[in-house]
Amino acid sequence: MIESEDVPSGAQRKPAPLLRRRLWLLWLTAGLASLIILGTSAYVIHATVRAERGQAAIEARLAADAFTQHSIELTQHVDALLSGTRWVYRQTGSLTATERYMDTLKFDRSVVYNLYLIDPQGTVLISHDPAILNLSVADRDYFHFHRETPDDQIFISAVRPGRVTGELRFSMTRRIDNPDGSFGGVVLAALDPESFADYFSGLHMGGENLVSLVGTADRLPRARVPKPDPAKWAVPITSPLWSALAQAPTGTFENTSPIDGIFRFFSYHKVDNLPLVMLVGFSRKDLDHRVSARIVWLWPVATSVALIFMALVLVTVVLRGRERLATANRALRQLALFDPLTGLASRTLFADRLDHCLLLAKRSRSATALWCMDLDDFKSINDSAGHAAGDEVLKTVSRRMLDTVRSTDTVCRWGGDEFLILMPYCDGGQDLTEVAERLIARVSAPMEIKGGERRVSASIGVARFPEDGQTPETLQAAADAAMYRAKQEGKGRVVSAADLH
Image (cartoon, rainbow, N blue to C red; front, top):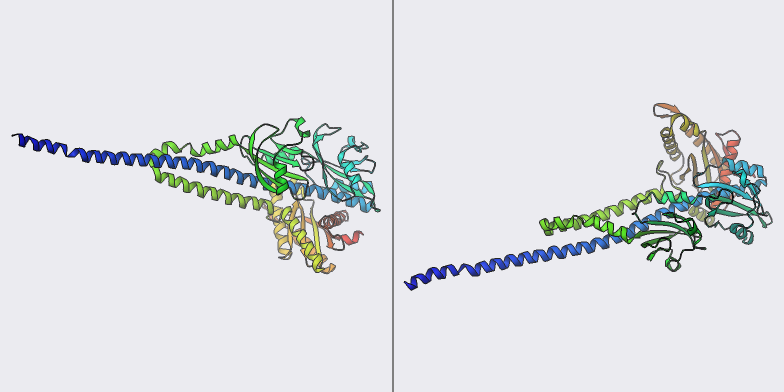
C-alpha cells in the first residue's frame, strides 16, 4: 500500500523539472528579447543622433553651398553693373551719357538700393536719389581704399546706416582710373542686407538656425538670419571660424555664438575670391528636436514588433537619408547651374565657361565672340497678357536660340529678358553678323501663346575676343554697350562693339 502510493507521488513530481526548464527558457527568451530590444533601441537612438548630426552637417554644407552660389551670382550681377557703368564713363567721359546708361540698367531694387558715381574728391556726381547728389563721402573707408590702392579690386564695406536715409546698407565699389592711371573716382552700388536675408530664410533649418555672410577682412556681418540688434553690426565676430578658414576654404566647427549665446554646429564656405565667407549653423536644441521627432514612435512600437520592425526602420532611415541627400544634391546642382524657367545656363555656369573659353582662346590664339541680346518691348507682353504669357515667350525664345546657335555655344539667361551667348572658335565678322541677323529673324517670328499670337524683336550687341576685350568683364561690358547702341538705333538689329570705337 505504501509502495502503491509512492508511484502517484513520483508521477506528480516529474513535471517540475520540465516546468522549470520551460520557465527558464521563457525567461531566457524574454530576457534575451528584452536585451535585444533595449540594445537595439539604444543603438538606434545613438545611430539616429549620429545620422541626424551627420544629416544636419550635410544640409548645412549644401545650404552654405547654395547660399554661396546665390551670393556669388548677386555680387557678379552687381559687379557687372559697376563695370558697365565705369566702362561707359571711361569711354565717354560724360556724366550725361553715363547717367543715361545707368537709367537703362535693369536690376532688382530690392537688392541694389542705388548706384552712384563719385569724383576723385569724394563728391557724389550721379545718384538716383537727388538727396545724395553733391554729398561728400571722402571720409568713407571704401573711398580711402580705392584712392590708396591702384589695383582694380572690388571693395565690400561694412553695414552702416545711410547718412540721408538712416537705413542699414553695405556697398560694393570699384575704382575708376584716369587715362594716365591716376585715381579718377569710384562707382558704388548700395546693397540691402535684408535682400540677402530674405533668400537665406527661404530654406528652413530649425527654430534656432543661423545663416550669416561675414567679411573676412573686418570680421563684420554683411547679412544675417536671425537679424541681429543694430549695434551688433559693428561688433567683429570672435569665432574658431578664422583659424579654420586659415586652414581650408570650406569646413565645419562648433562654437557658441557671441551674438545670441547659442551653441551651434557650423559649416562655412569661402565666397569665391571675394573677401566674404558664408556661415550656416544648426543649434543643439534643433538637433535634439530632430532626433526626438525621429524616435517618438520607437518605444510603443518596439515592444510589439521587436527586431523585424527595428530592421525595417534602420533600412528606411538609411534609404530615406540617401534619397534626401541625392534629391538635395540634384536640386541644388540644377538650381546652381541652370535657369529654372528656361533651362538655359545660369550665371554661375556661364561665368565658368566664359573663363575657361577665354583661357583656351588665349592659348590657341583663336577668336571668341560674346553676344548680349535683349528682347525689345518685352514688358508690354507682361502688361497686356500677364506674366504667365511672358514666361512662355521667354521659353519659346530660348528654344529658338538653342536651335539657331551651334551645339558648342553656350546660351545664358542673364536676367529678365536679357541673354548672353558665348561662341568659341569663331572667325569672320560677317559670318557672326549673318548668324545674329538670322537669330533676330527667328526670334521675331510670331508664336502662339495661350491662344493668341505674340511677337517680340531683339537687339544684339556683339563683342569679340581679343579685339573688344580680354577679360570676362571687359568683353561683357563691350557687348552690353553694343546692345545698348542697337536699341538706340531703332531696335531689332545687330551692332558690333568694334563700331563703337
